[in-house]
Image (cartoon, rainbow, N blue to C red):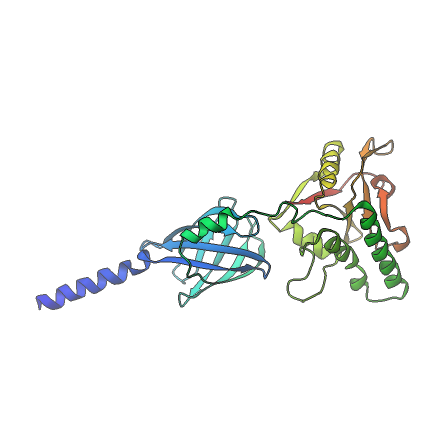
Amino acid sequence: MLKNIVLTFILLYSTGNAFSQTDLAFEGLINSELEVRVRFSIGDDNKAEGFCIYKSTNEKVKLVGEKGSDGKIKLIQPNGERFEGKVIAQYMFKGEYFNKENVDLGTFLLSKLDESAESDTDLLSEPVEENSKKSTLSDEEIDQVLNSYIKEFTTCYAKSIDPLKCRQTTAKAITEIYNIDDFKDPYVGGSFLTMTEAYDKISADSQWKMIGEANATTLTEAQELANKGEVVVIAYPFKGFIQLAMIRRGETKMSSKWGMAVPNVGIFFYNDPEKSSASKPLNFIWRSPENIEIWVKK
């Protein structure tokens, strides 16, 4: 009888603490494009803690959270973004990724990682390519790219091709100029986002930041960033759509109409394609800076 009691106690003790002794490690993609490595452990109180490494930037962030009664695990970053999913048979961590506003940014599917924690040190020490999000093209080459797509854009409308296809031209041009995949549709291979879809994506993407609405200060900052080769985008709501423009390298010039210095932009003007331009002062496109947002890729 005593032997059975002791055996039962050992089984209960080992069962209750087995998961707390297990360090879980996974690696894979968020939304089929952002590669991460996640390590965490869960105690017998179902509290979780660990960290996530964003492999594109070598950034390491802390994770805290818990495992719910339904088996779902929430891992929250200090900025409020979180992983929310389940571990499947210890070999896969699958779920949804949310920003701090609780907007679903897409799915993640992470596979079990067999490498030791020591390998994280090597990963974090790998250099990040400083120009990975900057244009290496000359101003003349950018002119060529934009003018080529403007021709495609105006032809698209002239031939009454699907308007959604025409509105993807901005995404195509920015993708080629900056060699980024931000404006590609992750669910449809080779497809690009319309201007409105692109705006929805960057406004929910932690890799993009709105530096403010158009004013003397933000336009000066935007021009400085564009001159460094950064991806700087103007967003403007117009007749139920979002119109996007790309700030060009150069110098801002004073606009008496706006009462401030403004940059030049490359724009595909969807409601009047003939007004599209590879480089045009911002005040020649819109009457005032009202409702104009400026976004930059981090």
